[in-house]
Length: 150
Ligand code: ZN
Image (tube, protein in one colour):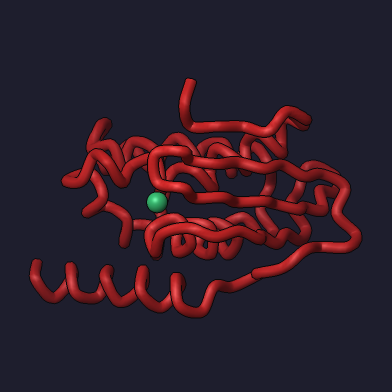
């Protein structure tokens, strides 16, 4: 278990130090901004959605290691996936980091499982879910900036 925990920590550190898909996507057809006032995390997403699939996406922003690693791993997970599948991933990720639901009811979260430890730190949950909330807002095509405070 400790080894697994170390591995998970490694994933989070690696993604927070070297975020993947960072920047702005010029050909984006959908965008959303999210912020988590509790921690000061900010995430802006730009996505190219074609035929119900997220063909490409990038994120910009700043914040704590958890929020940046969550944004980076979210973009890796989302790229090339159907929108419907991503909604299921969002629900599964949410149940993982809040410690609710049964693992066997979730789709295979892959490296997103690294965020399972967040459930022990309730103050960090919103840092981890911010990029996912922002993704769903972008897919729902909400123009208003979203916040975790509502
Ligand atoms: Zn944070």
